Length: 157
Ligand code: CA2
Image (cartoon, rainbow, N blue to C red; front, side):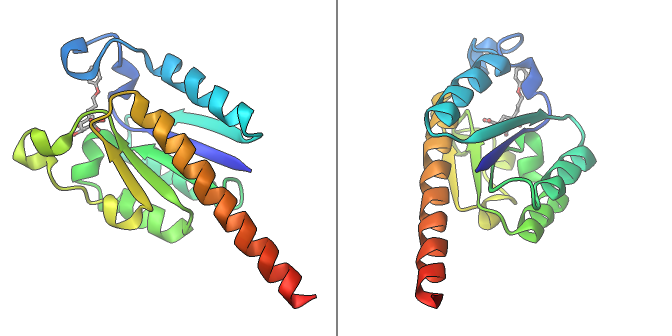
């Protein structure tokens, strides 16, 4: 089983700038922790970061037939991108939306997520630990999906 982790614009700056808002941990370190959880659960994981909306849409489409689930922090595109929302809906894979900050405690324009309605769940305000929770949550979803598929196959025998 494989999980693709998609990081939106400016998240490559984590731990480098604005540490007061987003903390001091670097994106690579967050990914190393996620990789560890994946390994412990025998799951493959791929990491992708882009500052470009179209590249994120392309990556979501590539998940079709390649990945079983998506963990995504769409960053600022959370609040603006119908294209990313449509891509997630189109691939019909379970997705979990992650935000480092609690977007509801911030400016009004961050309160609305266009992505949340097409996701299985949303984790926010937990800092980098939110990615850890998202991995655990996605692994739980994938195990449930696998168990349902297995039960269906056995019922057809
Ligand atoms: O809280 C989150 O995870 C956000 O997705 C972060 C986005 C923001 O636009 C969303 O409203 C909430 C911004 C990511 C920018 O990351 C930076 C990291 C370090 C330095 C500058 C920006």
